[in-house]
Image (cartoon, rainbow, N blue to C red; front, side, top):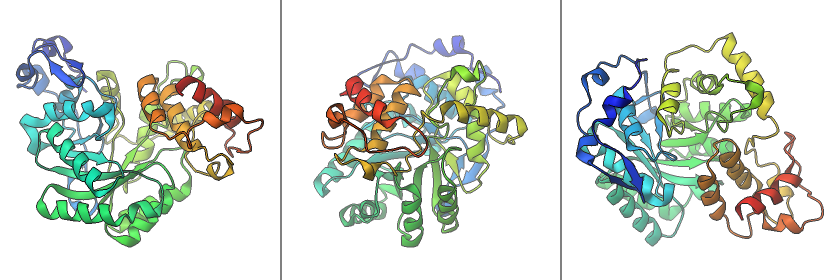
Length: 381
């Protein structure tokens, strides 16, 4: 792949994000690219997103951690056409950033955002706010954010609003995202036939039942988008200079029922690393790499299986606390870890763990919950 000439790109103007707004010359930044950038010949593969019939790049753009508009613009220039953000990312500033980049090329972008659960007034308010931030009058996919059980995806108020917005053309397709009970929710959605797209945490560390559920949902016509594809994005001493992230992404894309992926890409290097896997087979070397990577993170990475959650008498949401640990230890993003931990109620964060004599919750994969939970509250509480 021909790499971006950063020097020529910077001639367009400096890009800075301060409170979510673009400083400097936005029009210069979002203008046409230099000739050497236009000549990029990186192959981009596309798949069809279930019954939506949308043609999406196999590697989409997860914008959650991105603060540099130039990286998103470069991804679009390369042919990535699937952009994922959310109402809550970076306190709303992420939607503002994405909206600024895509405004001149809105029709070329499949835009996805998410709103969290709430009452009717809150859902309407948040969706209206997201549209304003994104500088658009519609989104291609609106996800109901972070569903945890079947009652969440059977929310009558949300389903009524999503249906109404779809009829009005304010959203093209309905969806939900999930980090918990994924297989159960996918299987139920396949039966319900209401949701058009599901965004699911999926990687080589997940159990087979999730793969089976993905295949079932895809067979029912649901578009499948995979997140958390690199199992936390860890950089481990055991791996030396070898990066396993391309191998992890290839593993996900082996499944043709995964229609696109949204790895989090905050830098040019991360973008260039991920985009190169499209259309590439997964061979013996990648499998060996994943084996060693899996061993090195085995007792660090939470699979979000949920088995430990019911074991805690104090109601600590252990998988959610572990997700914050992944953001801190894997992504090395303290801000993201703090924001997500802060969104947990006192009843569900790990504060009670600091005064607990002995942890009754056990991880079947060997994560030391008794040590990790109070440590996380000390760091993030």
